[in-house]
Amino acid sequence: MSDIKLTHASSLRPGSYLLVEGEPFIVKDTQTSRPGKHGHAKVRIKAAHIITGSNKEVVKPGHDNVEVPLILKKQGQVLSISGDDVELMDMESFENILADKKIADEEVREKLEAGQTVMYWQVVGKIIIKSVVEEA
Image 1 (tube, one colour):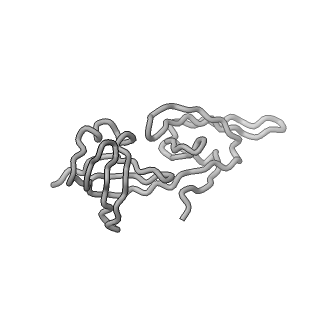
Image 2 (cartoon, helix red, strand yellow):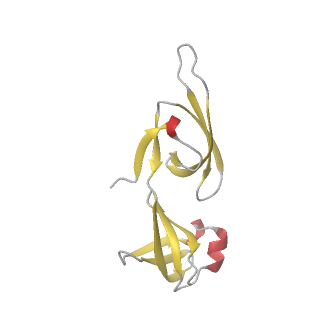
Image 3 (tube, helix red, strand yellow):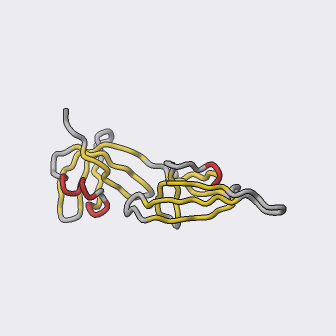
């Protein structure tokens, strides 16, 4: 299964994802300009990096294909934390996965402990810990 799919730039909406220079971004805003006499409509895409939060603006012809990452959202249990390495066990397949603590959200980084259940995203070969699942 591929980590990406192709879609037209004109079909992107706020909240959708795209790859810019191989890095995953979330679309914050799009603006489409009207085509000229011999030109094509252009789409101005404002996006934020899903890991660092840095902003980027990209302009593409509306008919051009852009790469969209396929994001797998899963739950796992924290087995151990060693420096910046977090070892997770997937709750469905029970496989062990190594995540980087540095790319987890800052508030999640502070709460992370062995034995907790976390929500993580698998995006373009990276494992991003998004939240700690509260036990009921």
